[in-house]
Image (tube, rainbow over all chains, first blue to last red; front, side, top):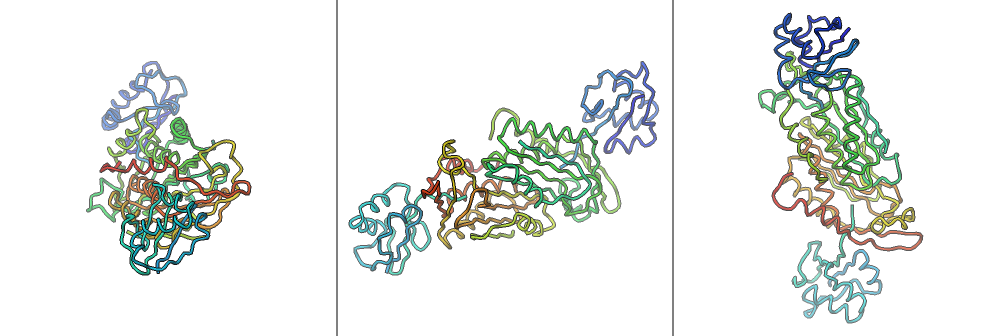
Length: 83
Length: 83
Length: 163
Length: 163
């Protein structure tokens, strides 16, 4: 399984999304997952493609072509607004 | 009268000095007072002449040729070390 | 060097945090504390029309990742300034105007280190730590946008200058 | 803008001073506090040989003049930064290692103003306000010399830059 997390305003666009997806060969990178999500949820695909959105795997920021492994935690992060 | 104050290490050199002096024509400026003090107290005259020593009249920093008036409070201030 | 990091829903007490920092070492010469408060016009870029309309802020964060990032920011500050102890506390959950939201405290031997490190920590925390704010403005909830001024503030620490 | 200045023998409580600043206005977004402590190696320029040998510090000041100068320094800071409240407390009399000696607190809408103003106030207070320190080092009393580093610290604010 790949566990999905959507933070900030991304969460509002991902209410309908199953947060646990089957780990499979054609979802090998965060980019693959994003494209796959975009097929079923066009709005979500659009916000996830904004250039400021970062992606993390197991709580580390990674590039969009980072290889995914089974049981990874994949999170989509809009620009932070703490402090 | 002119009231004299000596702060910090200047005070240690002025223990013997009368802190209240008669206002008179030949003590018309802080410089005059300093020179007059130096006559009786050579050590004090020396430390008061160090370039870092500032002088104030009635709690305002002034130049050494500032005119003195009766009842002025004249203070000699070494470099400050607060904070 | 003593580090304390906490992401919490509970309020913090500046008095306690100050005492904690002060007691770390007898070499302490300077303690700087920064406390951030929720302003009633947090929304947008200070538009007058939105003043006084903020009802609450809700802070979300990414547990574990946030704490680790805060520790990394503190380690980064230690490369630049000589500090004896650092505390970073950030609240999450629902906050009201005038509530305390973030605390940064630094104890050092010399005052410049404490001042600079505290300011650096706040600047980097704003652009690096995984917090997100949602504002309730008169009953309408909206996620806040990142501010360009925060990115600019953090950028001033780039390069090798220690000042 | 609310100003509180005090030169006092009594200790101060950071908690109380923080509350005073916080309560000045609901526009407060940032509170910065600086507390200076008496270090056990205050004497000289940090020579290791004199570490741990400071028994006490005795602070003298020029009553009325000091308070006026502190107010002038605060007014000067207001020309440069937008602050909502400033507190400066300086203790005089006999102090022991680890005692609190000076407090500067600033409340502002934005954090940069509070940080910069607090640092400016400390820098100028050190070179302008009429305080003198005498150290008791193992039973020998000596007046402390002004530090060149303090003059340099204050000089960085010269010119028109607000950064």
